[in-house]
Image (cartoon, rainbow, N blue to C red; front, side, top):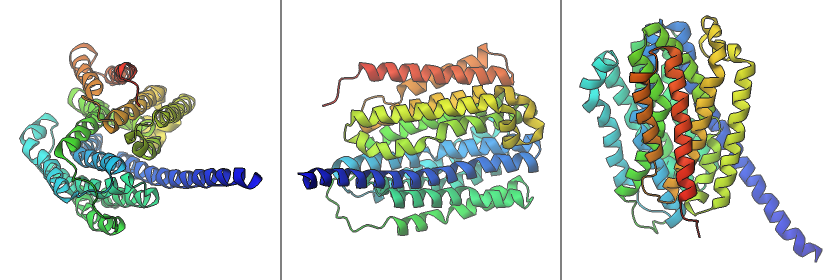
Length: 401
């Protein structure tokens, strides 16, 4: 009898260790991604003028938004494989890459005057976007197959490819333009590395992924990325260069609170695709706890956080640190709910986030003062609205089987 009871316990213990190891690996890869992403504006704040720092932050925001098709591709492929098994992904991946890479070029005539950017910056952003979008194919296959250790390695490869060249240029004092050129060139090393990493002998047992699946994930991911960068872009549009540069330092804290718990969603997504309500509850609880800790820490050490993010010149803004962190923490919870809606094929999965973004634009443009605090409080209100709408719509959904 003791042997019979010991075997399930042993299996459960082994499974827990595997999950813990996978979680640690993905968390480390996510931390590396965040660290390199944060390092860019941190170094930029010390090497560039306020105007160039704001331009750098804007280019990073545009690149991140243009890369959303790759994130949508990754989620769609992961969900499809978790539900149905391996299917062909080459065709849809190439089509998605064309969309992501072409978007910035098509919109360049609008983006250049709107954000007061040199045209070459938009071209370089487009050049760096293509390999980033294509990377979503292989990361999605690894995530859907729950090969989390290889996924973590792939995330690290993508992070280094996206940021290493740009960081090297800034550290060398090459200036903003030369740094962006270097970053775009290094980014093209990512696709071949991921292709090697994700090779598998699994046969294609499922139908190829459909464009509608990618479009649904793309829309949701676009909403999430636009929401995370909308206040930064509004600051660039509404504020003076110095004020928008200071605001970009604050958004480093927002991104920290937003992306720090991303490992939870990465690990939970395959189970969410299989309809696990228990996985959703656990994910929400963990992300909420992480956000609460980060907001409390920023309240205690706000000045230090701003100094760490932008240098001693920004320490006086430390009193605003909890607001920036709270905005990111609220969106982190929203993003768990949105990923669950995508994983369970819910219609209009991203509608609550798009409504909140529209509200943010209206309030910041026409109601709130055109100041750092005006944009900051508008962003926090939009995050709270997105969470309220997402939670309400989730409660109204039919229970899962």
